[in-house]
Structure formats: C-alpha cells, structure tokens
Image 1 (tube, helix red, strand yellow):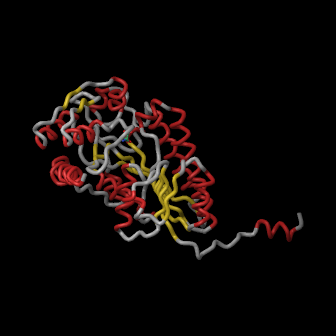
Image 2: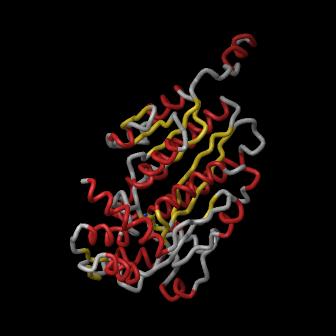
Image 3: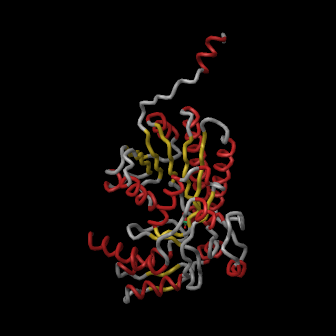
Length: 352
Ligand code: VAH
C-alpha cells in the first residue's frame, strides 16, 4: 500500500453533520419503555428511535420518529440506525428479566450480555466517528446483590453500591458484568475526543399503574394490586414477611432521565442505587385490601422465586444518587397507592 492510498483509506471521513440527532430506546415496548417514550416525547424529544422484538402499540409508535422490530442481537439492524442518525443518547432497556432468565440462562446471557456489549461497541464507534460522547443509559437492578442468607439481609443496613455483589441469578450476573464493562469503557475513553459515557441506575422493583410486569421476581407486588383491581384472586409467590425496595414508574423514569441529563462532572460513580420505600409483601396485601376490600390475596411461596427475593436487599443506600444528580422520589408507600396506583389503574380499567 502506498502512503497516499493508506492516507486515503485511513482518513477520518468527516461525520455527516446533516444527519438528524436522535435518541435510541431498545425494549421500547416494555414496561419502562412505554413510560419513557411518553415522557421523552412530552418533554419535546422529537426524534425517538424505538426498537422492540414485537411491534409497538400505536400509543408508543405514534410518539417515535422510527420504530424497528428487531432483536437487539441483530447487529445489522442496530448498525443501520447508528449509520442513519446522529445518536447522542441510548436507553438500552431490552433484557430478559430475572425469573425468565432462570428458565433460559444461556439465552439470557446472550441477550443481556452479548446484545448489550454489541450495542455498547456500536455506540462507542459512533461516538468516536462524531468526536462526541454517547450517553448510554443502562437500567441495572438490585438483582446484582446476593445477600448470603435471610438473617444477614434482615440485619443489613441499607446496602451500598459496592456491597454484597454476589448475585444468585443469571440476570444479576449479566447486569453486574455489563455495569463493569460500561464503567471500564467510560474510564478508557475518558481522555479521547469521542467515546462512551455509560451511566446505570440499579432499580428496585417498579410499580406501574399502566402496565403489568412479566418475567420478573419483583412482580409479586404489582401483580397483587392489578389482580385485586380486576377482581381476580392472586397468590403471592413470596411469603408475607418478605421485603425488597420498590419505586413507582414515574419516579423510575424521572430517575433515568435525570441521570441522562446530569453533567458528567457531577457524577462520582457510574452506577447508582435508587430506592423509595420497602414494604413487606404483607404490607402490600394490607394496603391493597384497604383499597379493594374484596381483594382475594393468598401467600403460596414458591421456593425458587422466594430464594431470589431473599438474596436481594431489603433497603438500598441511594445517597450518591441524591447527592450527585438530586434524585428525589415523589412517591412514598402511601402516596404511591393513593395518588398514583389506584387512580391510574382505575382510569386504565374504565378506558377499556
Ligand atoms: C426483576 N423487575 O424482577 C426485575 C428487577 C428488582 C428486580 O430487576 O427481574
């Protein structure tokens, strides 16, 4: 190869600045995706690119510039989006959740790890071509924790981001590993003119008034409430005394948006806990019965699923999020029911 031809082949093609700036959301049809697409569009974000394995509801699709039905492991489909737009933010929500992942651990690894790493690589290459930082928002989870036994869990102070990182699920292992790769790449790109800016929120269980969860192990609480609202019996797969932290969907969405918007200089870490309230499954049942006196709720623990809940902290220490990017949940346990879940669920039922 001559010097000239090498120069030509290696020359940095200037980025096409006429391309539209856009935000990419994977798993856009999932529980968080639904709320996030609505919220970003209502905040004026015109150019949302939504990817999901299944066709999106019209309520989501109508708010997006482009929707793509694809598996996130389909590298060509993902690469086409990066080639067609100037993507400055990725919300990578697609994943197999904890209970499904226990049934299909190697599929979970492929989707949750290989799919995520491919997307990080594409985002990073895109950033370096555009001499920019691509913010890569990753919903992580309290499933990255693995407390050794129930007495230790019950005794523990609110758990910090660096404690008890011995997950007992494939999902927890997948998320913990991706957090580490994201942190590493962000650190590695720190002095480059373009690179990845990875940021993760470790979510607890999330309670949505609009959607019902599937495949997760925190599902016992939202399912209890949604079944009661529809007049259906529900048997919780964990016992009444079991406790993990929860947050409402609006607070979860606000959290990930706030972290996305935060000035990088204010971030002292790449991974943040967020919590709001930590009722037991029995507290959920009591509150649900107070709202729906006819509710038929039973406790029929399923050992495999209860063991997972037992390995997750009862409370998380989220002081770093509160300090660095002013995380402040609006709903406590009572307000979550009275001002968000019950009115929201009733609105959804009367609309059907
Ligand atoms: C799950 N909802 O149950 C998720 C979550 C806290 C757990 O990440 O798998």
